[in-house]
Length: 303
Image (cartoon, rainbow, N blue to C red; front, side):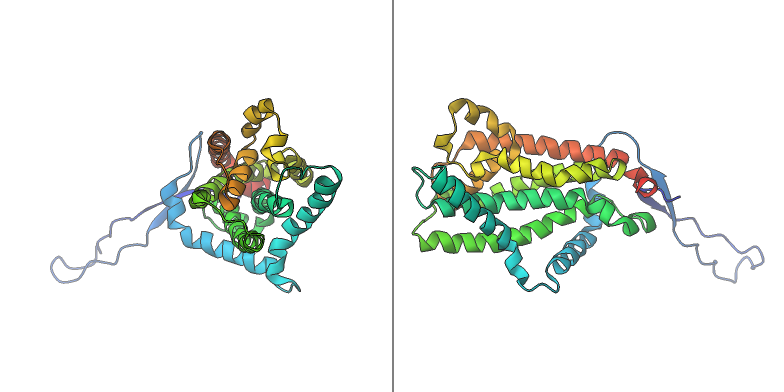
């Protein structure tokens, strides 16, 4: 049985040779360090110093996932923008043209694409992180390392796709004459908040899926419903009533997607929506990390 725990190293003192003379011989070499693995218990946040010691593993797991995603594909990096572009076309046709959602919105396709870039990063990170522990069963059962490294590495893959899609977004905005204002300086903060919220939800789901595989089967459907429950992806703020604008930021994706578009394309920045959604995302991240730490010691047995 393999037990997940944090290793603590201690070195035993050297033993003297009883057959050696009192003055002549050198002391015997000391024994190698002894690693003691003990289970972790209780509710607490992960050990950040231990995660930092394994930062190279985090980097190489993210790099491995990036290579696997685009290996032997015809479009290559084009798959990073295929999903938001396809969804933008559907929304622009059915919501923009037929349902009239584009009324009062200049350059509605670019408007929707900006929202889809942020949502694709959020949704893909949640989905990939949720299934990452089960997908890396052999790593979990054979060697010790902080299990949290596995779902966190998926954030790097999402960031890679986000950079590519954002470059296309910048080109589209420049082509139609959209010039972002000072709020573009907030993009790193917005992307960081998106990453924290997505990683928190993904880490929580990854721990739940190890013990209850039902979550795996409803994950894709649930993420799709979540997108439609985030109207900032495809609707302007004016189309949402004041009551909805008050409570919708409790959905972390709502305020963060809205903030990403406002930062990337310019316009008044909604600090209320961004602040509430960021706070909710942070709370979800803390809850996910604490639950993951509490149950990770049994992953090797349950997986």
